[in-house]
Length: 249
Image (cartoon, rainbow, N blue to C red; front, side, top):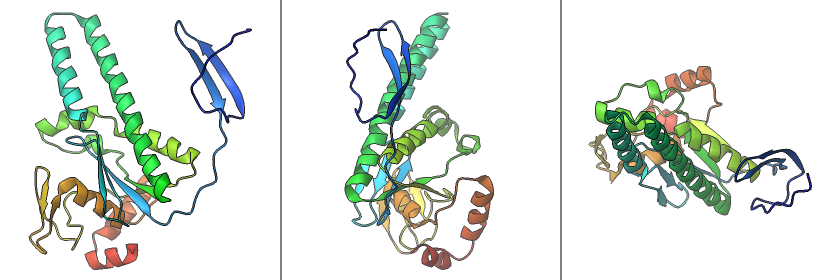
């Protein structure tokens, strides 16, 4: 083809698999060797959200909490209103363009959030813990909550975290999400959540609700991704809270 291309991706790939030429860009598929998996000293925990910050990252070793990108809900409500306005005017081609632009913005934000999470894990020599959220879109929810729940791509950001982490040899594991937002991360009792504030009637613990959820994720035992294992672990979690916590330490 005798083409000279300027590219901006890593230069340690093993081979070029495929090249596709578009009007403005060349799309190049390459093979990159994965690093061997590290033995993490602990796990960075990630609570993905539909309102407020997209992800809240907790470090159980230090107690530090990192809140990433608060724009998701605003982006979707903005483009939902734009599409509704265009549909009323019968401009269906513009509706599709608006949706495509929203998807591009979402993908860019998810790339940046996932990159930051993986970098944080790499710097601290830690693995990454996520909630197993398959099937969450079928969960019962209020009308106000349903739109952001079904429009922000939890799966997309999960896949981005997985492949970015795999390239750096960082293990990604999953836990049962059952009641992570309702239980107290200090004593395990069910608390009261009002907006982004969490209060425990048992021990009196008060915390940001997302931060409390992230530390609950840290306490959960790891399971392999599979619905049978999920149900088995969920049944086990319904037993004694103290027994559950001792098993995870």
